[in-house]
Image (cartoon, rainbow, N blue to C red):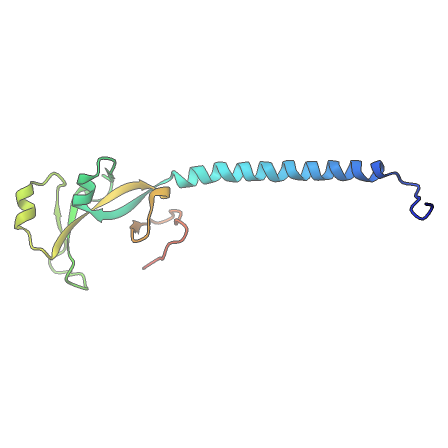
Length: 143
């Protein structure tokens, strides 16, 4: 029929359109790949998590952060809702003996600082964020 006759052939329209779509797909694919590489770097960035000392010692893959209190544990009284500034926290070295565990009060817990990758952070972890440090996503910040 003569109703659809035109001076342009379908190839003069589809050729440039295919070229633009191909170029667009290549640019988006490159951006996705760069985002993937950036996510790998971010997910493997180390951060410090507060964890019970006995859990750190029983976990073979756990690595203590020696830069905070020289890798020593801190005794925390879980019964009190405040920090006692008169006596301060008790600090011990992580290589304690099992008889020390039996003698301590049930309300006192030793905690240590563990170095983990950001991809290993789970809900309920207390994360130590230092000044000018990137904050992990989906974190509630308590000051």
